[in-house]
Image 1 (cartoon, rainbow, N blue to C red):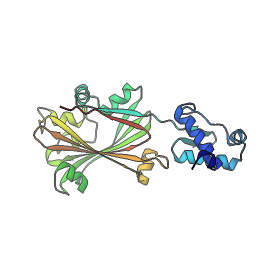
Image 2 (image 1 turned 180 degrees about the vertical axis):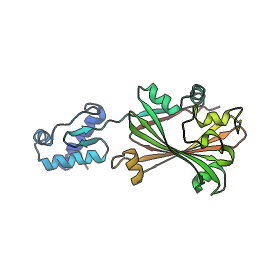
Image 3 (image 1 turned 135 degrees about the horizontal axis):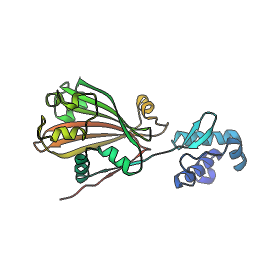
Image 4 (image 1 turned 30 degrees about the vertical axis):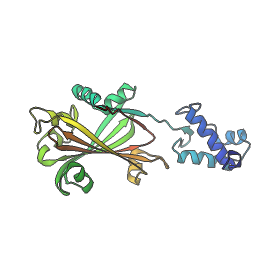
Length: 256
């Protein structure tokens, strides 16, 4: 449908959307009141309200009780994935997420939600190359940037390899699980040589939308990453759920 044929509320929404995406209306900026917008566009408050509702559903605007409507802050984190980058972060003891966020002037935080032994669900068992129901250790974490939830990450580890190690304890691990895997004095003593990632885009479940504060209409990226060692073992399967309005992923793939 041509722009001229759109209903008035869609025209208003399109204009405001363009101003938000161009940066003319900045993140956190307060919009004019419904009355002011009504006068600006020579229309009714009902029409303005419908336009704003559309942009809220797109995740571009948020309402604050008693304060008004604001352009939704979106602290995008660009995640750079390369082998060299992984080694650099590993050697410093700082996780890739924390290092990337901090390098962009943001304040990262990771919280341990739970650590427990469970029977491996079918999808995680397939990634780890074990039978469904095999005992695994699952570490559930939430990642935040500037106090805003950015992703949920569940890490699955074969219990026969990691029982009795730091991985089974409900606390943060300096250098991450990769340090435990590659530790010459650890239980595995193998170098991580490959990550394999599968990306799925879908709408969030109600629980994911609540935990990650995802507005209506915003999809979620599910990233499944498997770590392979030099001996050909699959030692880690990460299940990450990421709101698509808060991340930019860049993969650098070196071709030999």
